[in-house]
Amino acid sequence: MKYSYYQRLKNMCDAKNSYLCIGLDFDLDKMKNKNVKDLVSLESFIKDVIDSTYDLCAAYKPNFAFFEKYGPSGMSLLENVVEHIDSRSITIADAKRGDIGNTSACYAQSVFEHYNFDAVTIAPYMGTDSIIPFIENSENGAYLLCLTSNTSAMDFQYKNSNGSMLYEDVAKLASKINNDNLVYPILRNSSHIRELHVYGSIVKHGSSDKKVQHQGFGKKMLKVAEDITLENGYSKISIISGVGVREYYQKNGYILIDNYMVKHMYRSNYDTTISELFIYMCLLIIITAAYHNFITLIYDRMFM
Image 1 (tube, helix red, strand yellow):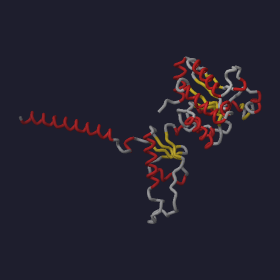
Image 2 (image 1 turned 180 degrees about the vertical axis):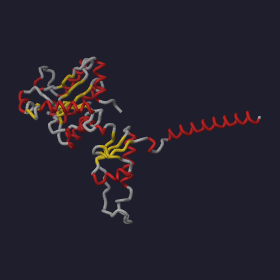
Image 3 (image 1 turned 90 degrees about the vertical axis):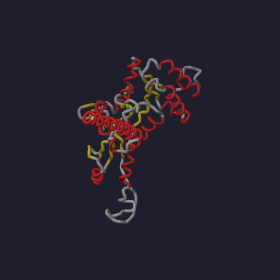
Image 4 (image 1 turned 45 degrees about the horizontal axis):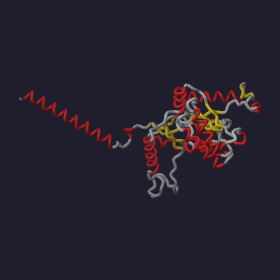
């Protein structure tokens, strides 16, 4: 598992003694270099910039718009740029994403899993549920758009709301997220199940009718989810649960924390690995041999 985004950024800044972030906002239509006239020459130019500056800056910030305008070819260029930077500097996707929860989750997956960025810029004005998908994993970073320098920023960002400017409210929210690390701290180091469903014909509880319901499939799915949780290094599992099914999870070792049914995971709850069994067997043999030698020594002193 990687270090948290904050730790990786700090390490990079310390290693380079720099807080410089270089924006990669290249517009072919405005390039003064006459040799840069198509995407092939633009890619070469961008890579030259990176190779000439990576030891001076902690991060690069490619602006998605200047790549998206060229369609698939431009996005392929963006992938090549991120791959070229590699781990030499932090990469920040200047994409200004932000939408309702499930849409933001798709944006987050695209930025962090497909394009492999370390962080992303977010337009936060749809609220916390548009931010959460980007920060659920501490390995990912997010920068909230707060106060901008464009002329029309006055239209909204300086609006007075309950005695403070709108941009100040955004800054306070960002500060709270930094302090909490997550909007919902209970999700820290936790795998997350949205819901657990067993589909089939409705069957009365206790009925002998051999249908899908009440045959233990839910417990089996929970067990698989818990195994996956441990295999991926998480220490707990959190489930979004309606009020009516919380008792079911309680019977399976879960407790209610905030709005989640949570179970803390311990290795002792699971099958022991072959390597662990081997170690235990070796220890048992050593202890048995030592015990035998001790008994033999006592017997010799008493009766010989």
